[in-house]
Length: 201
Length: 283
Image 1 (tube, chains in turn red, brown):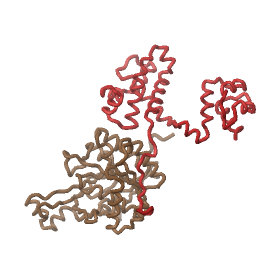
Image 2: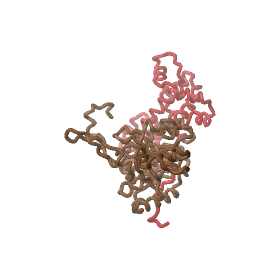
Image 3: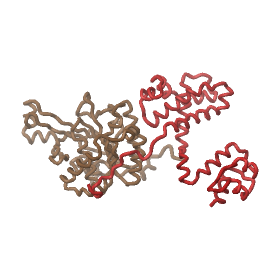
Image 4: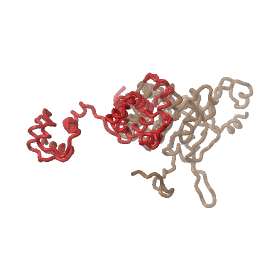
């Protein structure tokens, strides 16, 4: 068959869903909804975590891959009834319970929280970029800088920034050299990125 | 922020125009709109399936569903409209052979068909079949990059083959997907053995029929008794094929049962309404 006689056929997906990554994000959001890991520790509620992880997977497998309750139960090694309870949980009721509006509910709490978290994660539509993809885009350094700046108390002075960005090499230049040329104080992570970008272009 | 509600008059500018997308069969004359001419209302054939509709074609095995869908794709391609053909049942190589034979028989320039039809072969790829989001992403890519205006999914049933309990959910997301991307669509859906042949019901129950804009039912009847043989004036052992628009929420349509044949070239030829066919045949 010549090239001209070929029909255009797409035989594999152009993108795939990373279910594990999405479930992890939903799980993280569940913890955020509950006020963070520290709060869970404080109220001795760490035993909730396995149920939240389970519920996060259930809502993602249902919402993204349209799996049946039985398929989800088999995949996660739980009962079909548990899957059903999670998916039928009334998230509004659970939300009222978390905020203290009501003291007791009959809903599957982890299920309701996971459903709230899944909606939030979907609404925010974050983009997941892998490390090698960041390298291709030439912005891997920006992620590294942001990770190091996590929790920083802005504004930062030169010494504080040097300590945080120690040993990072940005576009082949040690961060210390770049920081020497920066204007201080810097007021936000965005400003740090902006100045570094200007100085390395 | 997106508006939560509209006053009806605000939708005037968004209203979809009512015209037909040709199937290359007599079905084109079986959808109509009604226009006022002086004191009278007159039926005007649309010339095809309603633009931007998503139609469900259902029927028993080998009743001609795929034949109709392929003919629709070929006719649209011959008019230089791009078609995305998602094949879930027949591998793409077989689809090629089938379309080439039909195009030749219909006297259509096959190079136009090749140029204007993009195929997603989900028949050989588990992820495309099992993961609706992956398939929709791939379809979105094809629609965006190839500028298609029509989509055929043959069959939608293949996307929930072993989990019919999910039929409603899966059909709904694909229906919404085609609406969002402004495509005129055809879903082929298979019947199960317990379902009444001439009904709109298909695998997954009435889910498909309830969600889509309209359903076309294809049926075939094996002539087995002397009485049927006399009625249809057909020899015992022959097959009588029928087609019927079961419903369409977008526009007026002929609701009669029509007789059709699958030509030697593998195309659909709709002959006449069943009642006229019987009268003509002297039954």
